[in-house]
Amino acid sequence: MARSKLFLAVDVGSDIRNYAVLMQQTLAKTGAAVKWVEPHNLHVTLNFLGDVDDRDMHTVCRAVTAVAANEPGFALSIAGIGAFPTVRRPKTIWGGIAEGTESLKRLYETLEPKFLALGLYRKEERGYTPHLTLGRGKDESEEGLLAAEIAKHATWHGGEEFIDEVMIYSSELTRDGPVYALVGRGKLGG
Image (cartoon, rainbow, N blue to C red; front, side, top):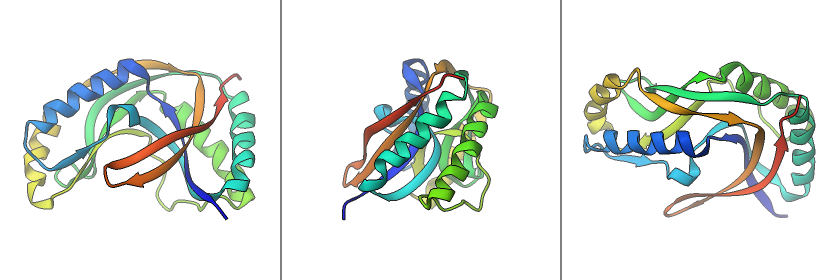
């Protein structure tokens, strides 16, 4: 039976995308080995469902549509640069969420129990921390190159967008990186 790797996200739009690409270019000047997220793949993840049977795709779409319809659209702004697990050990380089955090968390917290009840989701041990992933470090020996540069941009402003829908994407990992395909969306409307 066919399966698709699914995740839910909000699209960041062109304003944030343009600022993010400029920041990626700035950070890339350090020469550190980082796999930068392709501009068309930039998003803020809500829930990662993982491998879902294609027969359950409509169930996922219906759940997202129902939840989204009861939530209002919201402003999203990106500010500050940081890294997981720490700036000194930057495995994932991200832009922070300055406005829209509460709305993203509410969506996450409303969607998660629906997918748990459907058996389509495994609860994550760590809490949800909304962020915009810019890149992933590939070489631990070069972490120091990024740390100082990331710290310089702690107050970076990464643009603003109005979020009016939740996107459902499938993800296929290829040799050149992930390829995302839009499989559904839920319009925010509350």
